[in-house]
Structure formats: structure tokens, C-alpha cells
Length: 110
Image (cartoon, rainbow, N blue to C red; front, side):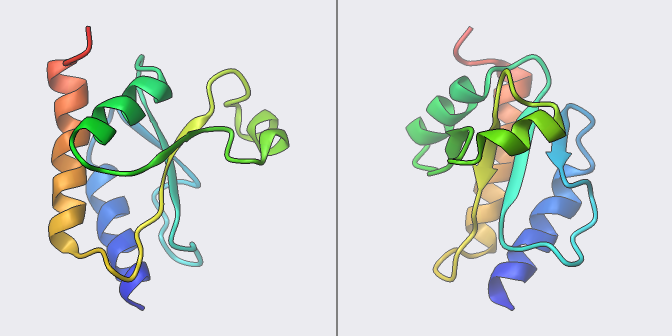
């Protein structure tokens, strides 16, 4: 229940940002504790690199499931995968959301 609450909050907040595409949409019902996303015009590896520098662990690329990327239209770029866990809290999710906004607004790696 804790992980689902974190994912629900994350999805609600990220769906407010027009430059973030959430694969699976903004519906958080019947979703596991995983959110895959991309930021407009920013390579997923750059997103992962920046988040890592902020101490936020995510996974980028094809996630050992390359065939699904043909279906969701990300077979050339992959996604950023966020998997909140039992030991995460709302403060962690807030930090992640702020970092994702900073990536788009400040483009620190360009």
C-alpha cells in the first residue's frame, strides 16, 4: 500500500507537467510500483545521469524488455524507470519531482 501511495502521488504530480510523458498514462489504478517516463527532447541517459548526480537512483534504457519498446514507441530511446520502494517516502518523491523539473527548465548538462 505504501509503494502504491507513492506511485499515485508521483503520477498525479508528473501528469501536471506537459513536457513529461508517462508510459501507461496518468491512470494510477491497477499500476504496479513502477513509472516509466521520458522528458521532451532530452535523452533518457542524460536524465538518468543528472538524477544520479542528485543521489536519485533510476534505471534508463530498455529494462531487459526490448520488445515492449516497439509497442510503446520508444524502441529508439528507451525510458526512465522509477520504482519507489518500501523505504522511500514522500520527501523522496518530492525531491525526484523537483529534480525532473530542474532537468527540463535548467538543462544543466547542455
